[in-house]
Image (cartoon, rainbow over all chains, first blue to last red; front, side, top):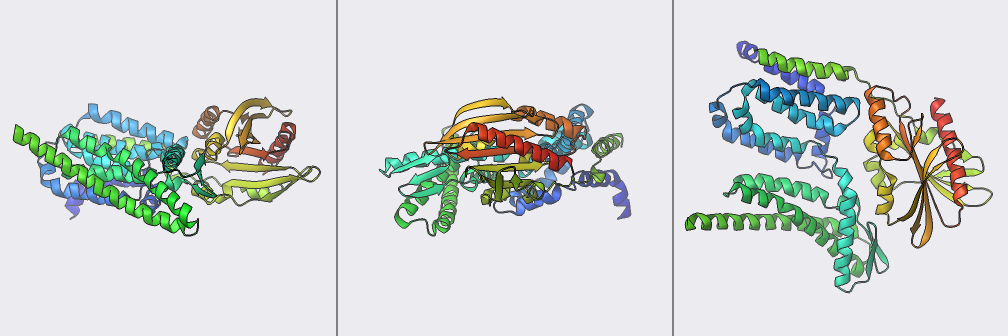
Length: 280
Length: 199
């Protein structure tokens, strides 16, 4: 056991230094993954999927030729250093989060080389997205306004007396607020990554897989507007009492419907792929 | 072996360039406790903010009050965010657009005490709505967020942020003169500087 540790002493040291570097951020990330209301609530699920990828492809990874590369790795390592430094010193938290996958990319390239890095690229990209690398909250308000505008248009198409001021929709004597949690961004983000995971299992060309993944974006936006519209109808005929409970219930139904639509799209893609192969 | 050492050296360099293991969290200034409720002829009372605010601001970082002028019975809302975190300060235009306030006219003004403020003439529910705001690092006042963020970046990078960074927003509706709002803004700024720099 001791000889095994001796063989990997540098790898262990690298891991320890990485943990020290991110020691104040790891608890924050874990709390984001544990918070059902956060954008990153799918984090543990994604980490489990990354673990699954490693387990499934372990034998393939062992066979890949390991040839360390300085020229490929140094830009990533120096880039990670700059991102980390800027992030910590100038208080750009997203840079700190982004520096970790960049460091990991540099470490893989420096220790194992480009061929191994290529095999690790997909799990690494997935890992990058469970970290807060984008200031997502900055697009919450535009999405709230978009959802409020579109919902108001839909309601007026049904001859309902509705108008909106910013993110507040006035329906007759009632008001429905499209708050940040109703912007659709959380479901968009999680549906997108469900799409990424699902695309791994679909039997189709890469372009079709990419199109499939990106189809989750308009789907999430449309489903969110549908949800707010249904809540609008509920409030119109039942008043605002219990509207919040109804909103949560509808949200769950719409989310399940979205999965159904994603599944249907994947089946269509696979059928089309099968037809194309048969034609050839 | 050489490549592993290179990786370790780069990571340890990151540790020392940032002082990560030894970095102390800067204490927040409890703005709601230090800022006065009485400002010349204005008397303030705390307002409970929207619950959503607690999602992106720490409780000790903000102050929301409604100030009433004892002589004229007019009201001005005051919001102050004082923080060390750049992502806790955003452009007020973002919030007010979301609340359905139309911004008809935006002016940059310099008040008597060299205070730079953004003065906005707007409307809400067809009634006049005034917004006055400025950013501060307690050395200067700023009206453009980009310029302020650049200053924050440089201050933090060179460890020169002594008092933190703030945004002060005054809002008023209806029958109040713009001069009354800007006079109140000067009072707020003087009080804030006195309380924060006096700590």
